[in-house]
Length: 152
Length: 125
Picture (cartoon, one colour):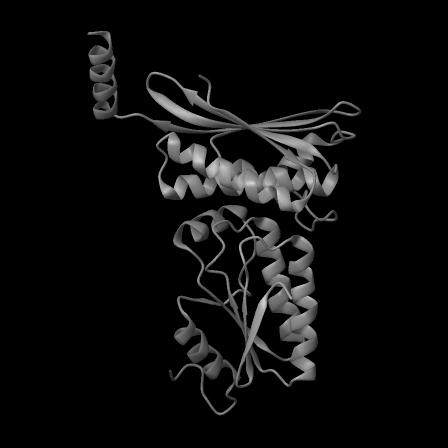
């Protein structure tokens, strides 16, 4: 079964369960405590971005499992007016005007391995970000053994 | 009151809870800034040990609390930043120079004693 969690975001109080779910998923995926904190912080940034600029949206957290690596995917979606200057939102403003956009998204980008922002005026904004963890030989060996045992 | 603020001599100790809302964080800034004047407070200790995530908004809020208190004549020390949280905070590229941080409450009190004592040479200690 796919490991996926959805959290509706409508107020700053919703950041707390979003961060907690992200940390829990990161730990299930074998991330270190530090990496789990980085992931939870990045989730906090994108969720706060929704609260401050749009008002409501959702966070989707999904476990990613590949042969040599596993990861956590974070989607932050809203149906707001969209971001008119995507490049500027990602780069960040130095002397920020708005309350959140200045540092939230660039901060989240630095905390994660992959970061994509998809936004068109009128259709809302989706931020997709991934943190990867490579699996070492020992972990792969253990998994092969588990699979063999199950097959017997 | 959502943040417990304790008085310790001329100092205030504010412990921030994990589930503090943004509005409550801004209210804390006002409250601390007002009490600095009303109660002749010379130093503030902000305890963030309960926070397992400090995002850029919270980091900037802490900075603005420190700067507002400084303009009112009080020094502020942050105590209890978790090691993983510190690693995350450096990724923001935020200027956090005004945040003076120490490990525990004893050190925080000692730091404020040094900062608020006009007789003391800061380079001597």
